[in-house]
Length: 187
Image 1: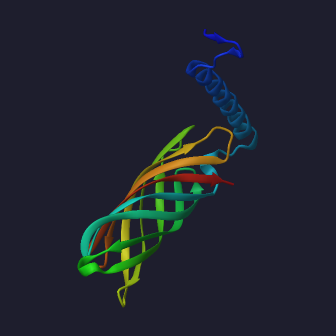
Image 2: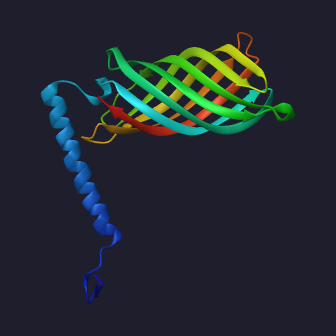
Image 3: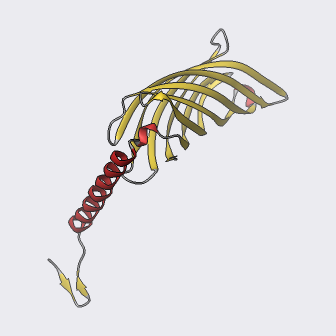
């Protein structure tokens, strides 16, 4: 161990040990609370904020930043969640048209709840609403999703990552793929 005149030097291994002990302590506390209440974090409603990148094929193709606000809750079992949410992005399409899109939708998620990580797949639909360039667009959208929710021990804070692919219009005249990651808060 290196010593300087002001005391001992903190190394990465010290930080790792402290972090591991903290996580283990909080994890044990969370499991104790779940056993006492009979309710796991996978059975609690949550609100999530996510951001990422959307690859779109509309009037032209491209990629744009994407943000979403979503809420989910169990539908009678820890294996099935209902989700409602809204996403937003803007595009520079063909001929220099700038458009903004709002995507309100609902999905049903089928998850495999585990202690820390809960992988899931989902299916749903909603509206794909765009405006800009003197025009507006409102079409139905259907979507499928695959993702992972991570619980952070005893904290109600969590993380999630997801790929959501959507068809736009009844004839699927447009499509998009959203890669997002975000934070969630369980109640």
